[in-house]
Image: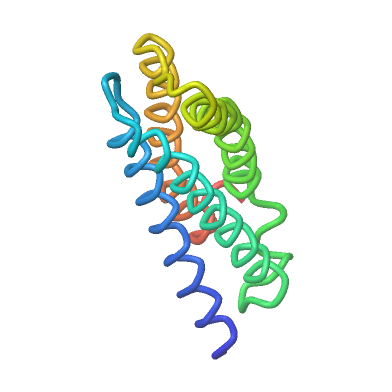
Length: 149
């Protein structure tokens, strides 16, 4: 029971951190940002990635050794929807990650800041990621309650 409680706590904490780092990216990534913000974005993105991986690892830990176990979660369509949503968000996050790295490189090599239109496009993707992330708790509640089984 203590392992399950610890995994649950770490899972919730990592989900909160995932959302927090994604919000930070959204706030920092805006047209007209300066060199400090361009350099900050890849670091924030790395923290977002780490928190998202921690959420996945602790969630899978709960699946494997948690109180409810595999038999409870695997047949549940909400579980599959939650995993699919995680993959969609992960896929959407690739472009912002690549742009953040490219912007920092361009700044370091040539002193150029990213074009405002490109920043706006990447910021829209971060907005979409955040909106989709907001659906995760709904799917978690449905899954935990066994709704859809």
